[in-house]
Picture: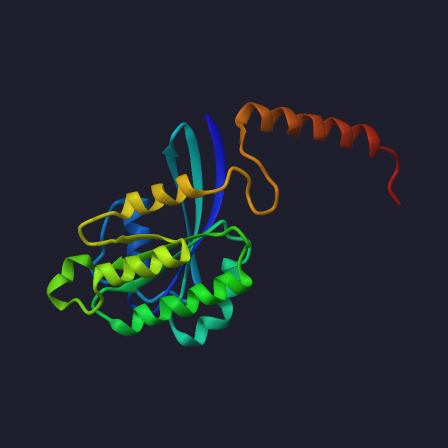
Length: 202
């Protein structure tokens, strides 16, 4: 089976549920109270989609304003980004638009963008209409889903949609190889380095 590593970052205001989405995806659990992320946290998860194993390297960035300047460290070089907002907080949706502008300006040229309206389970407190959010996502060519980390609604589907939308080649020209090809190339590289780089070292 072919395998592909995917660097992915999550962006959005503090408290929108970025960490909860990651924990739900990686461990299929929900924790009622998660401490605020400091800087960023990192988790990995394998997902099989259409005969390819995607190894998601997930960077969950902090939402507090004081950590905002650190975000480029995590979204630069990312193959995909999920911008999360809280369906019960209008201001968090406005932040999505700001992040989209920043990613289009400074992110990888063919980065896959996804917008997740989290806390769908709190529909009675909703401030963002799903139709409006989807229209915006369609305008910018982004994946859109409403999620609930609490109920697991659309969380696996979000990552599956990203995997299916990834270009056949990554932004830096790398390709998806099966494990046999990778092992052959690695052994060839080791042989050439041992044969060409021998001799005494000063």
